[in-house]
Amino acid sequence: MIPALVLAAAVAVLTAHTVVNATAWLRRPGAGPVEVTEAVAVLLPLRDEADRVTPCLRALLAQRGVPELRIVVLDDGSTDGTADVVRALAGDDPRVTVLTGVAPPPGWLGKPHACWQLATRTGPAPTVLAFVDADVVLSPYAVAAAVTGLRAAGATLLSPYPRILVRTAADRLVQPLLQWLWLTFLPLRAMERSPRPSLAAAGGQFLVVDRAGYLRAGGHAAVADRVLEDIELARAVKRSGGRIALADGSRLAACRMYDSWPQLRDGYSKSLWASFGHPAAAAVVVALLLLLYTAPPLVALGALAAGAPVTAGLALVAWLLGVAGRAVSARATGGRAWPDALAHPVSVVVLGWLTLRSYHLRKRRRLTWRGRPVG
Image 1: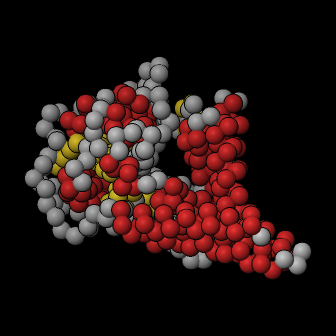
Image 2: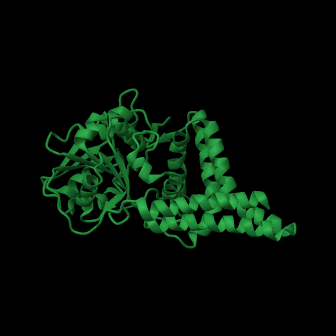
């Protein structure tokens, strides 16, 4: 009974932390009409995105509230006619510039190099840079609202996390874990106030940064070889004396990250090893997650079979508390809470398997993304 009680208490504390983060500390930029006077450059790196860039670019062209807006697109070695699609959509819009990227030099990964080319080829005018991925669709005032949120937070870098669109069973099992993990385990207020680089989180799908602070931190050149370039950029900003902030951007942006299970599997596999660092650390974290969130329903069933109703009840409470934390996270970030949260123990198992796969493929030097080696 005592182990089950300890388990339920631990999950209760973590779920309470999720609630506090979601209700008290999570920033929520408004999606309504707002106008900024600063010059803003929206930077869009593209590599073989001809079949998905149209909604993203149309939303960028429809942005309001930013009179001095530039949209700079980098065609990063596409072979599917991505640049032609962009030029056809942009027409003669003077706000749009299409650049042709060069291959990353030794020591650089593709995404950081593409972002650095964009950031250094916008000219001196923009005071704010907004990095957007091709799978993100912004609401009409998203850029203006994000810039307003950046300045209101007194931050150098603001990460308004988009609403993640889920369609398949795999999506519903895995994708909500992104928001759940940082809402459950990251103290948001301490992250904003503390200068420690280790307390950092960011999502590269939609990232707004003060240009001067970005350059002071070294920009993407400081994270040239990093798989998780978004989080590492946030850490570089902190190391340079800047501040970072996370926000719920579900009213500003929507993102369909992967179209199929193989894409999702490979997308997580390429980066999970970098999230945990040493394999021993990953093993400890995954073991704890499995103990806290997957073991309770199994313990409940086993205890019922063994005729221990008190232990079964405590284990059931632990499972329901974990489900509640997952539901709170979903509600706070524009996700789907029910019935998906009930399968949270299975989600954690899938995350553990993806983590194991990530380390296995990295050890064999078989991690690739967009036709380029990773890690």
